[in-house]
Image 1 (tube, rainbow, N blue to C red):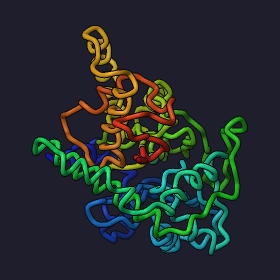
Image 2 (cartoon, rainbow, N blue to C red):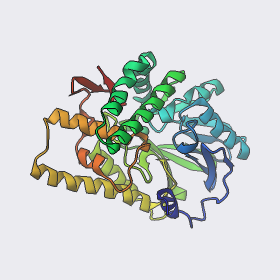
Image 3 (cartoon, helix red, strand yellow):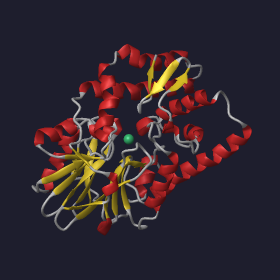
Length: 363
Ligand SMILES: [Zn+2]
């Protein structure tokens, strides 16, 4: 069984999940997963239009969209799917966090007069993270990744370097191609959870730590469904490359997910729909790397602390968006091993400085 088939097996017998998708465009499909609840699941092998997962919730009186996706076409695709089942006015679209694969399509909402809700830091972090890329010279931005390809000393090293180069090239191109649009309704985490009444359907927006420092989830308690954003990426390594990612916070959040009803259906930020088994798997990965850290600590690490830290982030960048995931190999996360990898903004590494949430290398 493939890894994604395995993750899907978790919910394959779940009567809430419709077997037939409402719409399937290859790059993403939309499926009914509950009463008025729909999940948009992306397939990265078939294009970058949406990149992340999302969905929508639709009641008698209103609808709530989840995610801005990687492009306005992605947000538009989901809106079209909503209109196949309901003409209810859209209350808002929620960016679960600021990362570009969840937010670059916001411009679509702007043209439709749809409010975009998000954590208060999202607007600033979109601008701080992606405007530098828009102004960056391609050769300078991609050079370090290309150099790693050239300098690779083994097939494996070359494959990793190639994968990182591909991932960063995509990030770079997406940022360049997009007119940035930022959320216009900040949701203060101190005032959450926020109840969203859609008419016979009540959703809760909640804030949790772990993936980006701006993470929010949409929970439908009456139906045991949670749209998790990237706090859960089913079948993937938890992408820890963000400067505000906290391993300890993330583990607490996953513990909270695990304490939800045993029949909870999770719509992860990436990967297939999953149930509690999907949460348990990611928790095992975190447990495993924490265990490895203890052993490693006893044995003593290599290199100076800042260099090691930079290598950890470099490794984490490999798993950014899960594009480069290596089933059965926890090496990348063993190296972050329970550390707060996001604590440092700038890290010296071989004369270059790692900075920003994308781990962009500056010369
Ligand atoms: Zn993310």
